[in-house]
Image (cartoon, rainbow over all chains, first blue to last red; front, side, top):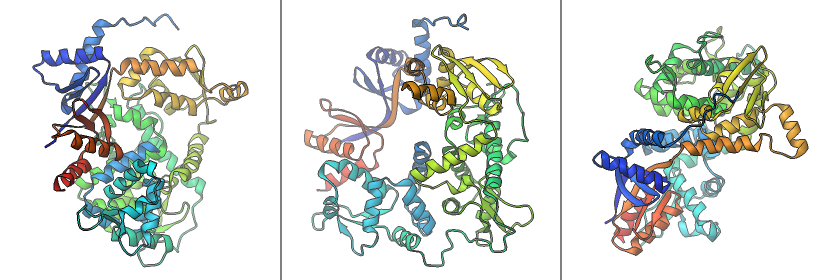
Length: 72
Length: 471
């Protein structure tokens, strides 16, 4: 008998996916419902906003923002 | 257009079947749903079924559709049954599947198209009218009311609060807060929300629907009957601009509703006589179909911009500098949502689209396409002229591409809410379900190797799986 599971399908780059999986591992698997392949996974619907915030936090450390203040 | 349609769709699809049966007792509702909500193929089906006395076998209906358009057929039929317009009998071994129009919808649509009956659902013109109202006056009135609301939404974020006019009434303000278009919370800086931002950038008709749906959801809590409320709205859409209509045939809750519609600028009630009301252009374009809407809303846009000068006022250069020839606080506030404004002159503001300003807009829920289409529709005539002379696109391609790139940069993942189907017993069952999901247009992802797939809605698929089990 097939089962239906409610969730949010996330499609992203493999690099982002691995970060999401890392976040999930850190927080006792509170986010991911099912890993589908290296670019898609299903997460819990009510955790999406929190996941986005954590992802942004992680990415802030890895990216360099170009300085735009002198362009005007 | 598409925004408003899908929003009202989703709301309607959530209603129970009983509500639909009551809604369809009104010819105006049946007609409005028919002309506004249905794609062409679905319309064709309805028209063909309209005067058919007996149920039509589904196989006969298939013969009207080319085999390679099976997908469109399934989508049309699934929409029709979701809106309770047709009933399709459950498949069984003895009888072939048949399709019929639901009786209320059928008889109401026939009444709407050919006339007759004492239903009064298209409004009753008032005969002792003072005079029929001038369309220009009603346009002005509707614009003032609606701009008042937009001003309120924008100025809740702008620095100079409370400029221009009295703003909307308290009930409208309350509605905007309930609908989370603006917030009052002082600690977050107050003001506009994500929903509010995308609300601002929608076209007028979509904005009106957003407000009305908010209001309907709210009205249920106030104890108003959603059927009466909806059928009143659908009736408004069939009225004629500039004519007086009588309030005497309205029900109590519809009369209550009228006061709110006055706040929105959808109807005008003259102060002297309370038994008449005039629908404005905002109301009469509610349920026009796509083509009619474009011209009508263009007419309305023209009316909206008449006061603030020329339609196009934005010049954008390849170096991301932006000059906007406007003094309207509303337009400037909208621009400030995604531009870093530098200088303001009496008739012009100048600024610059930067990575930060776009990122800020996107974090508020505005999409790059919304920004680009806003810039495109409000491009200065000079920009349009130069572009058409040299055969280039109106907006500099570098800027357009860069805005899109900035968005992608911030969108690390694409999220689609829905349902994951898994644990199929065998490959055959999996394949049949995937094919069905694809045909009704809900499939977003599948993996043949894992025998799993992801869909955006599951109700029909569940029925399908059950019916397969029954076989």
